[in-house]
Image (cartoon, rainbow, N blue to C red):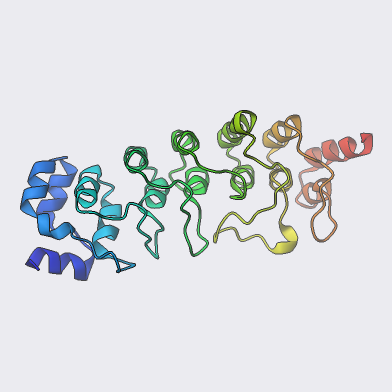
Length: 250
């Protein structure tokens, strides 16, 4: 094993020359200069080389890794698959490359962190372009809690894209109450539908959109509170009033 490879395995850092080659997109230089660096250990869950590749966000380094038989859905304990990592980073170019080469958009993070789709909606690098890419490449929405995540984070664009996807594919449940990941800190008694989440946080535009698309204003949580009750408790009186009147009409 070369000295650069030993260093990378122990530190999780790519050598500077390889980083430079990857940044410049110099595939031939990267291949010839550190070819032995990229023979990843398939049995090693947390291979530092793959971590470093994810951190680099470089299509070049992933091209080399895949040429050397890396599992494209390789699981990393602290980051999920490379696709999940690219979605967290908002790296649409890398995500598209990985999907083009067979990455599974439904290969979530086994420790209960966010799915790729949820990262694209609520992460610090949230991206509608990424959401649309994942949906176009076969992401299954139902059961991910993605609509709840979008509603609770006030992501109007993502709510609209998911509902448009539902209209075309029927792959969405407006009344699901799924936990959408390890960073979903709602207590069990406070979990509800997407409409419930939007109302609780006072996102009136999202409340209107969900109602127009058939969301049920009569949902109650495990404590028996209605969507209107929760909106009122959080001080969103206009939202609470609207929801109460809808329930009364029905």
